[in-house]
Image (cartoon, rainbow, N blue to C red; front, side, top):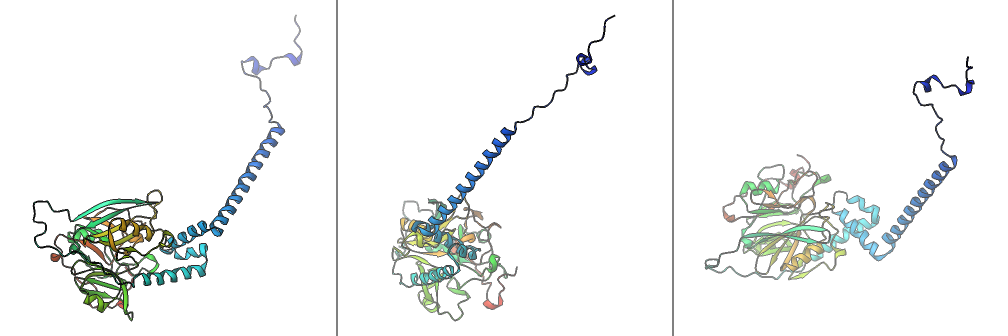
Length: 389
């Protein structure tokens, strides 16, 4: 009879049944854990110190160097043109913000003082009846610059441009709707309007609105003169500071109030990009020596596509394209270029889509057949609530 093996050498019932004996899990070395924690701490300190140093260097560049100051004030100017104007005080200070805005108002007024003397050729009888096919009335080309993309609409006959207003009382109208409703070939946004909290209904214009030689809206109050952008009955573009009496004597046909004028008598009025009133979406109107009207529209506030342009950028593009006079129209989220049928060409920056506006410059083959009713007739500016929809 064989004796049983010692207890320590007996096989457990689990092992005998084919299982694997349990073994103790290896424990992580305390030294390895400490080494890992030390590495993470050093990495954290490196990132923190590097970040602080980067912020310090950026602040020194941003506030203490000429180039940084140029960029800082350009950024502030860009904010001034938006609904977040007050944010600019965190960049340049509240006092500097007030001084900056007041400075631009004064500068824009001065830019409208010089009298424009440009002339356009008189229309020759029988023009366009020769064997050569006449040019298209309108053409659109894309323009690009440093950080921006836009479009240049050329209207070869200035007398084909008409200022159009909404057809319903109480709110503005989208330019695409105006173009579609009237059968226009093309259209762009025109004058500014009262816009409380950037939620205005687009029905209360700023300054003057003149269509077909008639005053549709007069918001001048006691002001004797105002900056306007428009076209007279002969197709000559007018821009600058005028009284209503002067405009009537000059034979104004279509006009809105806006500023500044940036080109007069063939020369640019903005000396450099740093004085171009920040980067923003732009709508600018100009005229060539041959009479053709130029509408420049620059998209903006859309990183990766187009940030926007300064007025200096717009000025240089128009000079390159032969403009002898040019003036700023309402821009920002109002900037829009529409083609026949109501198709929007550009990319408006408004988060809520195309805005409701009080005025638009539209192009027609036969503008004399277009009826533009005066929806402000009998209304005083004080009668209109700009924020009520």
